[in-house]
Length: 453
Image (cartoon, rainbow, N blue to C red):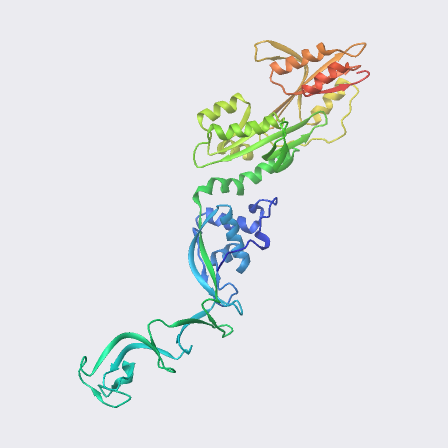
């Protein structure tokens, strides 16, 4: 039975584990493939090794040998990064597991290995049958049994063709019985006892080039960019949606600014051609069900026209390769140092100072034009442009001599909705009624109820 390679050692990618490309040795090998220095990884026979073969390209690029080199290639094949093709089949000794065996012919009657192959002659007179070289003597055919000279074929003798003859029991046969001699432990085993090992060559899968080039360079830098802006980054994040379904987001970035927590869903779509509407629609549905309104889609090589219009309508920030490169190399949106301190305030000026320390540009009593065309006046508008996304926080401040009702919160929420601002904070002095509090919670408004401001 043919043996299959197992994923073992440091290159294994267990269920729920990290990406295969987190392994620096895998990254080295893949980088060589992307650079065109390695197109196909071919095995080379080496019977001094346990496997019986080596992969010189893997040894040179990643300094891996034997089972570890094989495991790495199988891991890449499992991810369709390389395509494996049949190269050869080796025979394995059941005694010592060596793969350096040679076949030997044996007599099917007595089992002797003392057999010879040649043209078989039969002497009519004495009925002797033997190999041609037994009859040859000084340029003539002479029967080794009766010593009579054989002169004429068809009259004195005949040829039975090329067959085998056992030197021990004189059996004549067409097909010998094959056994295998292990050159490592000298065991002689039958064909039924030996094992088989299929070995493969591995060719780089060009269709994966865009994805791999992103994984090896821009993605690492992009995650660093998010971290520098204070985000906690989780790759392949599992998120439970409002529908009860569990979604997997390529990247989930979250940052708590004290006043609000910004959560960004980041999808990565990579293809050989333009990315269609179905791919971006799936990402948008996952983000919506997860209650995440800040959305970024990395699209490589680019979005199709229909998908681009949908992204604009759904307020999905799209980063194509040129946008990503500008973002990661430009200095305009370099992370500025922010002061992390407990969130507390006793006055509007103290609240504004806190926001400015977090990197926000703050405006008071500012007019914002809504999608309806109406102009709304915001008590406080805090804006922070990070290049990948612009966060805007609408802050309403209302005071009264008793807890305020639904109408005040509803009016604030209506202004924020029309201006497209989804991060909402309502400061209520001295507080809200129960009905107003429930409405604020349902609309995603953070309420800060204070006794005085």
